[in-house]
Length: 76
Image 1 (cartoon, one colour):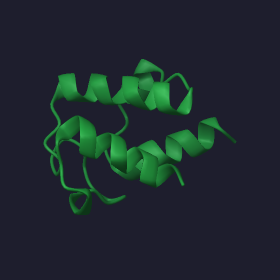
Image 2 (cartoon, rainbow, N blue to C red):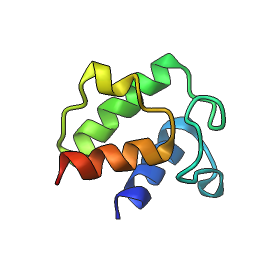
Image 3 (cartoon, rainbow, N blue to C red):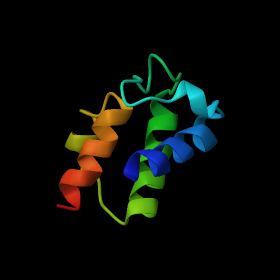
Image 4 (cartoon, rainbow, N blue to C red):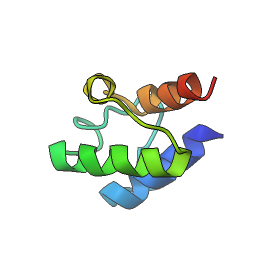
């Protein structure tokens, strides 16, 4: 499931507890990511799922669910 992979990336990249990451978690506000973290996170997502996230799309990603939905939409 994409959520589990995304969750593990977030836990590793942002040094979080797995229980802190839910689909509703806001990446910046709830999980503490800054703009540099977001760049690293997007690159990790691109590598893991072999996709390319457009800059315009990256700026609209606010929650963990947004990432999961983007991956599902990309792979549809």
